[in-house]
Image (cartoon, rainbow, N blue to C red; front, side):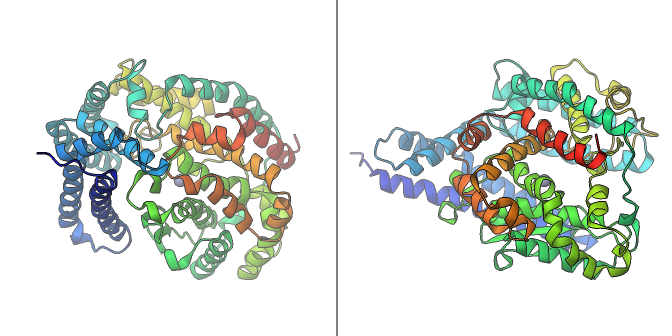
Length: 503
Ligand SMILES: [Zn+2]
């Protein structure tokens, strides 16, 4: 006779598996963090193996048939709490999605990722796209296959996008990037015709220690908890989380360009506050994880751009910064500093772009990857298409492949559908920030005086505490009353640059 187990027992069994898989993934994250921050060069090969072992163990746990049966059984139970129900539904979705990929496919794409990545490194070294092209082509073929395995209604790209931004699709993105194409060029043209601002003070010598100390001051003011995190140096700044009680950020120091560390610390700080604000009681479960990449990016960009590149913020922080760098900044007024940090200038490299031109870089990648996945664009034609789009949207042309089509690692990793989330993050950030101004009456006064934690608390209440409960669009509607709306960003940017460039 089969004994029917109580829902509480079944839920406990589910939770145990999900949390053990999370333990494995978080152990991988510790190894990944170490690899970027401390690991000696010779550790590379064995570390790759260790990471692969942990990843495959976690994958096995989360795709095992009994786990799927457990979730299906639980999903049919009527006596779960709301939170429990939501976790089960989301975990079952994840399970079904994972199951659509055959083990042979997972193996193939894992191998192709390292082949494409190595080819990308090599082709950057020799500055030749042709070395990368055949491996990238194989990766694209696999991604098309993956989209078919997942299934989709309208566009194969939708299936890939879903991994990073659940609920988003080509229809939504075509609409928002259509707005970008229509509304952003007139603003950019006006700025181009205005007198350019001076940002040369960023390129003086700024000693490492003082840069570091100021970044810690800012992180503390934002409410980043150093007892549940730390900051280290790495080649590329990033945030990684092992649990809300251990969320780490990294940054990079360039003594001859101060802008580099300043923005990466505030940006990564925004990501880290989100991770520290996720509910620890939901550790390893969907409600304990971030909603989407777009929402993650909305948190980092809200802090970096709406707050950190805002005039109010520097009322309090600029005198502090001048104390760290009295010689470098003695002749730079706070207004000149503010204008310089917001300089708009079309350029070739996405990661160095300002708040306005940035979205053209993303738009170009979005249009290209959509066409690569649908088969309307061939890999071999990529450099030419890339260059003509940069010319069309930004009026700049790459000197070589390295400053052109070879600049991003994303496609080598198979991350098709990732880029749009960068722009979505900025647009959601503008909407959320506009909402804070309406809901926190003292916001401007608080920021002017360096009191930033009221904003952090607001974000905790509106975004962080919910984990994956809502999709990005649902979350945005709950917070602002409407879904993604490029006009709010446009309004914000229009006002900001009118002030800076005297438009
Ligand atoms: Zn980010």
